[in-house]
Image (tube, rainbow, N blue to C red; front, top):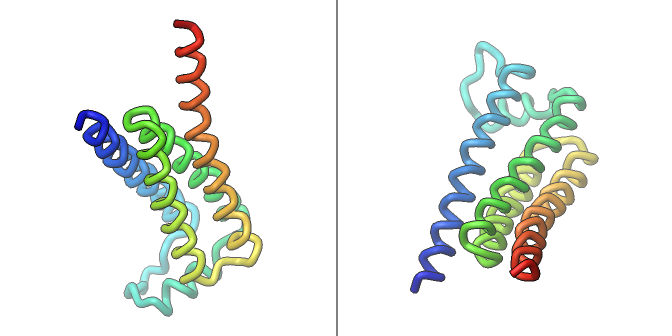
Length: 139
């Protein structure tokens, strides 16, 4: 029972951290590429806004979202072990795939973003697993 609760706690902690960090990334994006003053929030307006993103902003966003995924998965794995890390990784990767499929990002971003997220998630899980292995061998 304790294992299941720790897995759930890991998932919740990882997703809360991801949520907070994504808000930070979106805040950065709003500063460097703000919405137009007359923005009404329609899907068409959002697509036009995304289509005008400067490439350097998207490049920074790849790094920031990658760091977000790494940290969220690392925290989830640290607390709830590999099952929690995998669940958080799958949720974050699904969110990114959904996002890039819905909006008119450049082709390079649509290709790089899911790969960067997957790599960051794998790295987050492996960092915890290697630390656990080192602790076990030191005992």
